[in-house]
Amino acid sequence: METKEAKPLRHGYTTGACATAASKAALLALITGEAPQEVTIPLPIGQEVTFSLEKCGFEAGKAYAAVIKDGGDDPDATHGALIESTVSWSEANEIELDGGIGVGRVTKPGLPVPVGEAAINPVPRKMIREAVQSVLSQFGIDRGVRVVISVPDGEEIAKKTLNGRLGILGGISILGTRGIVVPFSTSAYKASIAQAVNVAREAGCRHVVLSTGGKSEKTAMELYPDLPEEAFVEMGDFVGFSLKQCKQKQIEQVTLVGMMGKFSKVAQGVMMVHSKSAPVDFDFLARVAEEAGASDELLAEIRGANTASQVGDLMGEHPLFFEKLCEYCCRSGLREVQGGMTIETILITMKGSLLGRVTVNEATD
Image (tube, rainbow, N blue to C red; front, side):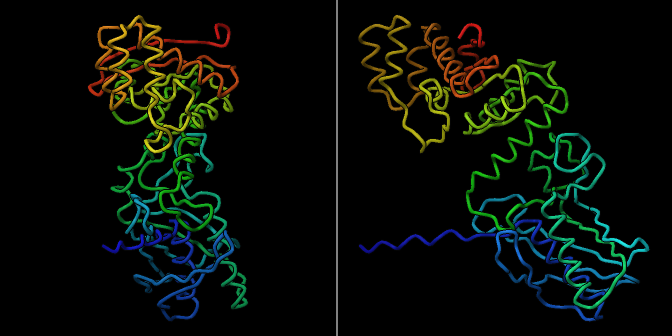
């Protein structure tokens, strides 16, 4: 039977690129009195791309245009969102840029945009301003322009993101450093981790809790009810990257919270714990079990296990096993960042029950 070749994943475009295209179209409409059907803009990566407009029109003294964001084959909360720009002349002799409905406003320090401003990141700001200036130059116009970016469904979309935790309220952020969205890119997730750690630092947190997912974070918040919301960061599979971000921001104590599957890898020094990054090493888990006093029969069962979770079930009567596994995680983390902080590891079950909890600092490492 002939197998079909897998199609290459399709790139998409950032909210920043969409906002730029909409702004250029709106300004062209304001100047010429005609609504373009498409516009072409340069992207930061050096490519030019043409956007079709979902709408473009006029109101009293202003023009508007909108683009539907196409995220390509990347699962993105903003895929399909309407990104709209309204452009008008301004008394100020400059290009003013602000956010309207559905674009969040920054309320906490630590983000690349100052507190009080619309959550339009630096690269999209530059792209929009350059696009506006290029149109003004094309027509030989020297006057101020006001640009307002809106996302009608932005407030609802933002509920699917971590914006609230980061202090971005009222809508989404207008993002993008390259202009394109690479499908299943890890760079976007890493950027959100770095941003979250920076917000925690700026909020005065000296203790950050890194969790592998929502269930782990919920348990962590119950264990540390006195820590502020900013102290909790979902690191996903990026354990090493997250620890290094904390070290860079001089976070003094880090707590890792997760389950057997991912933390059995961390314990042996694997710092990117995606299911495809490295298999669970059952011989390693057997050695830890042996250190915890497991019988030869139990060790054989561990070596023949299918999942790390199954090993956890087998070792349920041996609490020392989980403590040793937590200690291995702490020491692996300290090696990754070359010391300089205290690391605590909390190992939990799928239901949030505590299996083990150990703290190791540089002095005891």
